[in-house]
Amino acid sequence: LMRYKNGIKGTGTDISGAALDVARRNEQAIFGTHDPVDWIQSDMFEKVEGSFDYIVSNPPYIRSEAVDTLMPEVREYEPRPALDGDSDGLKYYRGLAGEAGKHLKRNGMLFLEIGYDQGETVPGLLSEHGFRDIQVLKDYSRNDRVVTAHKA
Image 1: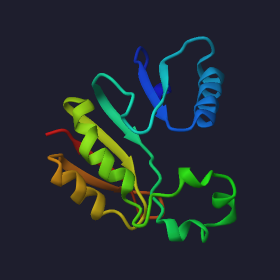
Image 2: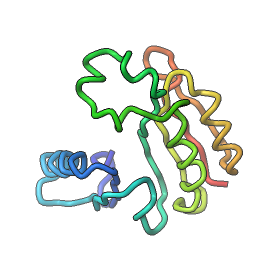
Image 3: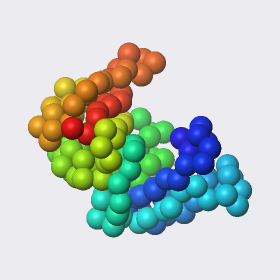
């Protein structure tokens, strides 16, 4: 995302230090010595300070019981914590709904990747926490895939 607009800075977080190492290598491959992203090892917003125009997240959203049934190219490639969204797949969305607004600037936007069956529940969580102009966007297979919302 950082490639599409010059002169912006971003903050990237992950709970996994190994995932952050991969992200740093990817950033260097794309940008060379120019470092547009500050990387923070953090569980959600635990170590995040400041406010942002946009928050983009692809949290774990698969129900725990379904992780072992995923296609091998998914379940064997990704670490389980990157997939497992707890018993209902909504654990991280609850955290995002409650915390993201504290880190968004006025009229800031939230972008969340969701599971194909979460197009009603995730917007409901966001609405309960005061987000507005909530939209669900479909992927190329016509499945619900992204939720966008504005800070109230």
